[in-house]
Image 1 (tube, rainbow, N blue to C red):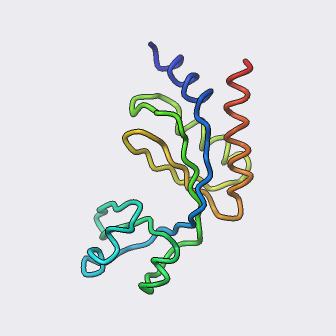
Image 2 (cartoon, rainbow, N blue to C red):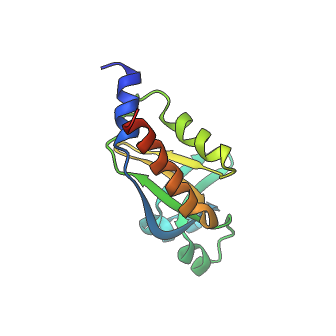
Length: 136
């Protein structure tokens, strides 16, 4: 199956789901890492230190400085790490609507973090992508 057909299939079946939890992006010190690791959604080691995506309540509980609040939209389709254009298609659509999108691609699914106040609109736009692909 070529990448273009594969991308269309993924877009058609992505079934975006808005998660209830509110998340923040933050820097976590090595000393604090063990405390928050079990409840962290994602940890990434960058040259400047550990970056984390944490539930808002956890960042507040530990007094960790963080970004504005984000909501997570998970694409329910089993996406491929080799699907060409998935992230570009999604981020382009959201960017055209003025919505910030931070994408985390994991082994099985893609997750898009959008500002909390734009989450419902972003969800509708992603559903719109699926519908357009499905009916074309």
